Length: 147
Image (cartoon, rainbow, N blue to C red):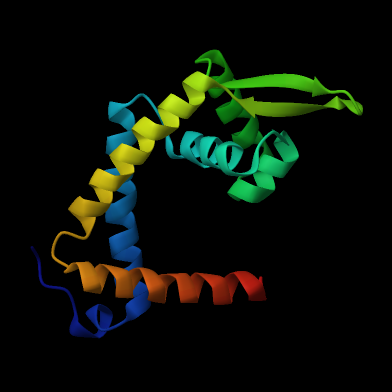
C-alpha cells in the first residue's frame, strides 16, 4: 500500500470516505452473487418493514431518485420479487407490494450483508463494532435532522 499524507489520514472525513468506498465495493460484489443490486435491497427492506407503498414513498424512504426507483422496481417486478398495481385511489400512482419470493431474496441479501459486515469490520472487536455503529448512527441522525 502506498503511503498517504498524514494530514489526510488524520481527517475523519477522508477516512470515512475511504472505508465507505471499500464497503460499497464489498456490498456490490456480495449482491452480485445473489443477482441483486443495492437499490434492490433498499426497496425490498422498505417494503418489508413498512408494507405496501407508492413508488414516490419508496423513493423518499430509500433516498433514491425517481428514475432509479422506477428502474429498480421494474427489475424487481420482472424477477417476481414485488408486485406493482394501480392505486385504487389514484390510477396515476402505482402501489408496490413485496412478494413471498421478494422476502426470500431479502433474506439472501441480508445474509450477504451480514458477511460483508464481518469482512469489513474484521479487525474490530465486538465492542468496537458496537461503538463504531453507535457513533456513526449519532452522526447520521444529527445530519439527517439538519437536512
